[in-house]
Amino acid sequence: MIQLMVFYLLAKKKGGVNNVFFGRKTRPLAIPYLLLTFWILSVTLIVSIFSLSIGTLFSTIISSLSTMKAFLIAIVIINLSKDKITVKTQFIIVIACLLIELFIVYAQANNFFDIHEWLSPLYRRDRRFNSAASRIGGTYGNPNSAAVAIAAMLSLVVSKFTFEVKPFHRIFLIIIIIFSFYSVVAFTGSRTGMLMCIIAISMPFLILMFLRKHRKKALILTIGIFVIQCSLPSILNNSKWSKRYINFTNIESIDQSLEDPSFTARVANWESIFNNMQNDILGGKGLLSRESWIVTDNGYVSVFLYGGLVGLCFYIWFLLYPAIIMLNHLFRLNSTLPFFDIVLLSGGITCISILIIASITVPIYANAKLNATFMIIIALSLNSIPSTKAMTARGKPVVGDMTKLCTQARNKRICHD
Image (cartoon, rainbow, N blue to C red; front, side, top):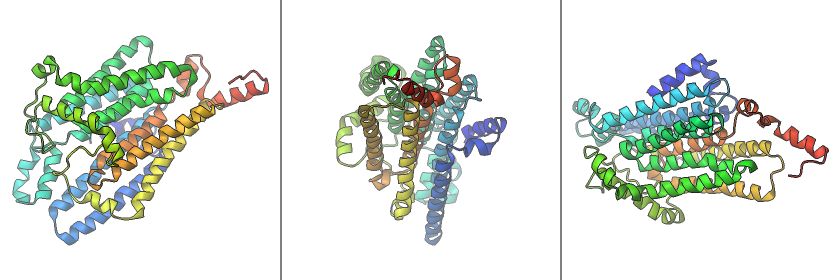
């Protein structure tokens, strides 16, 4: 919630919270998402009241707030791409929020604050209350929340700085990417966060492939990033350096099947994700189905998925809207997009949709991190386009005027694309 306070102060300074959180682009997502969250919360609260379970009430509220946090972070990231907010300001905010997240995760891992112990006289043997208190800052900790925030902010850094930072300053961009990815792997121990970082780093380059001037460069960068990231678990697992300097034996593993909570055991478990990824997708389980959530099962997901067509309609809208936005941006950038590129674009959006739908087919895994995945993909779709101010400053055609330029060129019969 500290990040949200920083974002709130920025929004207040830059022209009003209402415009930043519910701007023209984000309003079609913000309002349905708020309705969805309050619908789930109200239904689960009614169920909890009738069951007379304080633990279920407490756990439900925490689950709803965690989804709201991921959503609000992504919404503000979308609006941070506005021209009136300088790159320097964005850089400071991203670094500050990363450091805050890392401190929170490190404090959780080392039990600097143990709410579970403080509240133990209240819940006695209520397992649900026990789990909810542990997720806030107790014995287990919850690294996925920090990993989601890091991946979301990483998407902002990559998509924004790739276009608007001077070549020399891109060294800092590389440092931020390495630092963020290392933070997720070493400090949070979140396999979900690792997959989200792969999405966050790779998606801007995939979208760049549809801009003809950058296609070859983007293709090389994308292939290189995927190869490095997919081989990273195996490299770290066999590295003497990682075994000597990165061995956080005091971090308890969320996965109950791991007896060894060390960094080596975690990396070995991450490595199995890449080996089983194809089987999971083909089997309809989704990318996130390898993680155990026995500790955090609180009935929140069951009510949501078994509630009928309401949730399904919301998710369909969350899939369609970013796809429409992405198509709109790409056609504005190049109004003469050839048929082959349209097929590639449609195929890419379809694959993303299939992965998300496959992930929510397993009820117990459709929780806050999946909602965050939606928002990260949306943020990437909107942020990977260079801003008008940046393109004008560099002497290139303005993004919004590309359609007009091509129309004029067609009229003069010199537009050969």
